[in-house]
Length: 313
Length: 313
Image 1: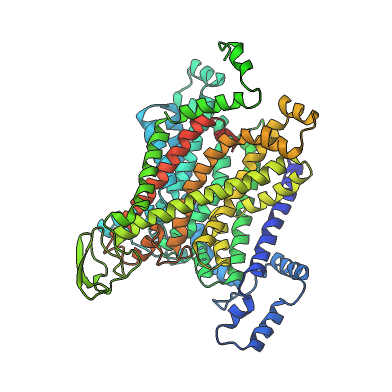
Image 2 (image 1 turned 90 degrees about the vertical axis):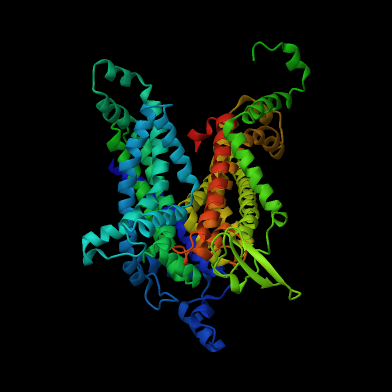
């Protein structure tokens, strides 16, 4: 097991290296000169040249890559062109809303989607199955912001149960914090629920026809235990895999959801940075999200052996 | 199969006949699938709406009318045309914050959405096919290409698209490129898995033994096996490309805002959404229906052409 963890950790190095090279090249390949962007429209040629020197843009590209890589590994992500702050400060300012939203979404999605998928598989071909599958196709087809605006229109504008937009920090009171996150969480979880419910159903359908499920029923095991202990446990590996892969979908959704609800998180920061061509911020956000995505999928691999003791490394 | 008299098989040209016969029958099955029929019909209607937009009572979708801003559906305004004569405009689906006709913009928007969806699907499938065929067949190339693809896939797709649009000047070409690149690794993986499984088949080994040149071997013996999975995958890519284009436009970082696209109509309406939901409502319906139709087409094609695909991805 320990050797496996080390092996998997080492295997992520080339992946992250490719991401790093891409992120590094982004700034160098852009048609616009980063020094000119920082200097602003009224800068003289000398000022631009001065900034180029300070950024190290005159060095050979390989040297630049190693300098940049070493700084990034130390946690020095550079300075934002636009916000005039260090990128690390910006990210730490903006990380709380994004973490809160993602956490609530993952918990809600798993709690709703897995039982739905199990139910759909159990009642295969029935109207419940059709509704779950219909919802799942719909969830993939309706864009996140349309879900968001529909929920705002119904529950905030018309019924006035929830605030329309905004975010309250956790240290200003957990009640308001959670209250403001309800609609964004519902919005973001739709596509994630669709994804997980669909995979749960497929995986359960396969397992439910196995001999040991028939045996469990034959010996008089109550149905709930047959479904959740015998079947779901054996169907878990693909479900957990899709939860991990779905993080990519979730990150894309975070960007949109935060824009719809004016939540000052990392997703909004990404859009603001792109609009301002603030490349150090864009680079840092992409590196970070990709790193988290790779790390979560590494964790998923480790969870396999806990879920299914037959898998040994 | 066994019931067929040997004569038929023997009479047909040995290489081309068998696969063609099989493809025809699965194609025929595909056209009887309800998802394929319904999805296909809806897509054809959308294409027809976009193509016939100038003849469906639309006005110039780009021209603003300052006196007719933010009219509800059915609202009217009288403006002077180029000759100075008064002209009445009826906003069937309301107008946006610049007085542009939402009905016209939504109909013309169908053109962009469908164009982007199909172009991204064709380009990414084509690029993925070439990379995947060579990577799957040439053993020394495979690890290099796959590490590169793993790295690209580690960046969540929407984030990668956002990063790529930030590099180029806003325009439809840049948006298409930015949506295409994140799709390519998925196609490459799929093609490669087909190539790897086909490479060990006796007929491929026979072709190698008889000294078939590599390009001919890939073209004649391996490529035909990728056709069905590529049609299915291309359809799903088309659906997701239409969604991502709308998301980018909605976030204000996609196709320039004056161009009529569904995402741009919604972006123009998001600030006055609480008073005038029609700006979001109508393009959202068109968008959701279109993507739903393409997804239904994809599901239907997968079930009939390539039932194994769901497990392979």
